[in-house]
Length: 198
Image 1 (cartoon, rainbow, N blue to C red):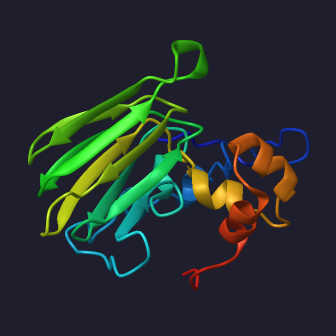
Image 2: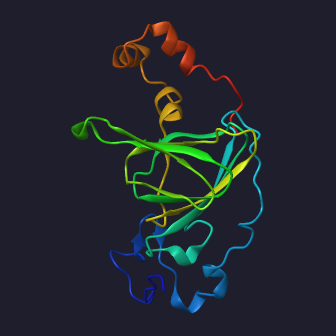
C-alpha cells in the first residue's frame, strides 16, 4: 500500500511531500485511488511523430504514490516513432503487444556512446536503463502498440529535440551551432516552430 501519514501531525509545518505529491490522509483513501479503466482504448496518433504515449502514473492513479512503479500505453501509427528521449527518474521495460518495433538506447559517454538496438515482435520485451537516451520506431505499414512499465511513480520524460531546439526562451543559436558543428542557419531553422503543438 502506498505511504499514508497521520495528518494530525505536521512535519516542518506541513504534510509529507514525496516525489512531487503529498501523502494522502488515511481516512480519505478509497478503492478508486488504486484503479484506472480504459487501458484497452487506442489513442490518437495523428501528430507529427505518429505516436501517442498515455502515462498511467501517480497523477492518474494516486495509490501509486511512493510505490516506485507506473505504466504507459504507447500507440504507434504506421512508420510512427516515440522520438529520442530520457526518463530522469526511472528504468523502463517495454513489451510489444501488437505489431513490430525497432527500439534502441545509447549508453553513456564513459561507455563510448554505444547504440543497442533490437527489432521487437509481439510478446518481445526490451529494457531501457534509467537516464539513457532511447527511442522506438514502427517500421511497418500497420499500427503498433506497446506497454511500458517504469520504476517510478513519476518517471518524467525529456524529449531531446523538443528540449534542445524548443526551449523557452531559446538557447543561443551560437552555442547550439558550435555544439552540433553545423551552420547557425540550421539551428535557426530547427528553433522555429514548424507545427502546432498539441
